[in-house]
Structure formats: structure tokens, C-alpha cells
Length: 328
Ligand SMILES: Nc1ncnc2c1ncn2[C@@H]1O[C@H](COP(=O)(O)OP(=O)(O)OP(=O)(O)O)[C@@H](O)[C@H]1O
Image (cartoon, rainbow, N blue to C red; front, side, top):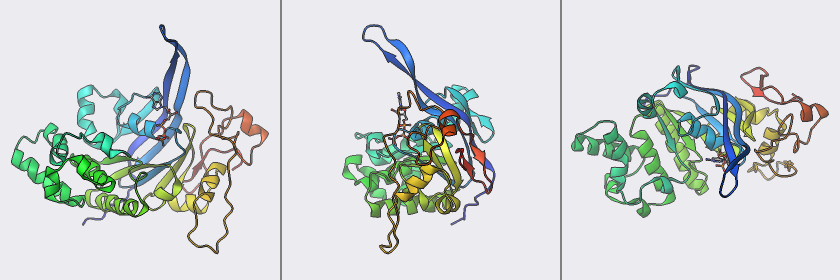
């Protein structure tokens, strides 16, 4: 097995990305009444060979970022740059070729696997689209990929409903791997699984990363899931990134009150260690009318008057650590 070199070279860059969904009302005639600001000015980079964890509560815009990166959705503003190419400027054909280098694994792999196709054909489909016309060659590649993800060649003849949740995720990973991608967007790939199966899949993703020089954007709800796998972690709140840092730095030295609250919710295995959980007041506000100033101010335990008025800059506080908070 070849060790992946985590480099400082940028593979993917997202610049001031915004994705607004127009809201329309009316039965006969639909009228535009405003925008749902799902992603509202997000910038980050993913370095070749690393795993960037993207964490935040449900609805904060994580999956939308993943879909905009793959151009399954067009951004309202901003750029996605992959290996120096601005994806939003590529033609349909150029984007089709580029897509083989960027794949996605979903939380609900069952919904993304065609129930009427055999697993071998599901994995062979992208290989065929890529232009491998020899059936024997495709079968050889399918067997190899099944083996790589911990399944057996005979699994190729079965249908998705014959597999457990964890095995279906392996099929989803196999299909993503079929095109030799450089970047895989893992959209909550383990959230629906038991803890022991989660650990197995995370270990598999790590092994595959080393073997195939993969780069991951790993999306998850909570910080405990991404802790083990991520080199760096970005914490999102209501369409924006609140904090981004190396994993170790973020877990040991969190700066944003939102990150601190999320970390306080992670249970500690040692019963002698007392940890006070910070319960955030209220619900996440609507992304249709986000709060003025810092979006987190309505729930922040440390709120000051400036927080209600000014949107904090996302700034570098040193040591590759970025925070959007007036109080840091
Ligand atoms: N196609 C769409 N049309 C309208 N609104 C959308 C669409 N897709 C997502 N949204 C809205 O955008 C916001 C962000 O959704 P998104 O799925 O990106 O969040 P998320 O952080 O991935 O949440 P979850 O963890 O629950 O998947 C939500 O308010 C969601 O309802």
C-alpha cells in the first residue's frame, strides 16, 4: 500500500460561494417572495490527499455545498475551482469529463442505488460511460473494486435490497471508486449506521484514501464522527463557516462559541471526567431571514451588542485557524 502524501497543494477551492433558493408563493400565479439563503458566502480550500470535515446542524447548508461543488446545482454567486479550473465556466462536455474526478457518496445509499439493477451492473455503469467497451475488462474491474471495498465477486450478481445498510454503503463507495476519482464528497455516509459499522466504514475510507490518493470532503452532523478521519474541520452555522482549523487544534482549542457548544455535547468515555454541556437556547433561525450581524448571536451565550450589528469577518488567528467571531 502506498502512503498518501497529504500536501499543502490545493485541489479544490471554494470562493465566496452562495446558493440562494428562490421562494415562490401563490397557487395559480407563482410570485417570487424572497430567497432561502442555504449557503451565504463560504470560502475554503481542500488540499490534495487530506480529509476536510464539514460539520453543522441539519439545514445549515452542508449538502448544498457538496452539490454545488459537483455542479449538480449552479451557485448563485462565487466560484468552485478544481485543479486550477473554474468549474462554473466549463461547458457541459468539459464538466462531464471533470465529473469522473469528483464523486459523491450519500447517506442513503439505498435511494441512490437502482433497485432493479444487479450490483455488478451498478458498479460497471460508470465504467461503461467512461468508454470501457470490453465486457470482460469491465467485469474484471468490478471484481477488483468489490474486493477493495470488502465485498466478494459473487455479490455482483445480487440486488441492492439483499444487502445490509453497511454493505450498501460499501456498494456506494465501490461505485464512486469505479472512475478513479481524485475527490470524493462523503455526504453523511455513516450517519444512519450502528457505531461498530460506522467505525468499519471509516477505517475502509481511510485505507482507500491511502491506497488511491483520495481527497475527501466529509460531511457530518456532529463533531465526534469527523474527529477521527479529518485532517481539518470546518464548522458551519446557518449558511456560513463559523470556524475552520486543524482537527487537533479545533478539538483542543476551539474559539467560536458555537464550536465550543458542539464539542460540549460529545460524551466523554471516562465517567470520572466531568463535562458541562452547553445547551444552546432556541432553535436555528430560518435561512430565509437570518439574524442581523453575526448569525449565531440569537443563541450565543456570550453575545455582545456588536454581534447584533456587524457580521464578523472570517479571519486567520494564526496556526491555520480561522474564526468568524467578534469576541476572539
Ligand atoms: N432544492 C432546494 N430547494 C429549496 N430549498 C432547498 C433545496 N435544497 C436544500 N434546500 C434548503 O437549503 C437549506 C440547506 O439544506 P442542506 O440540505 O444543504 O442542509 P444540510 O446542512 O446538508 O442539512 P442535513 O444535514 O439535514 O442534510 C435547508 O433550509 C433546505 O431546506
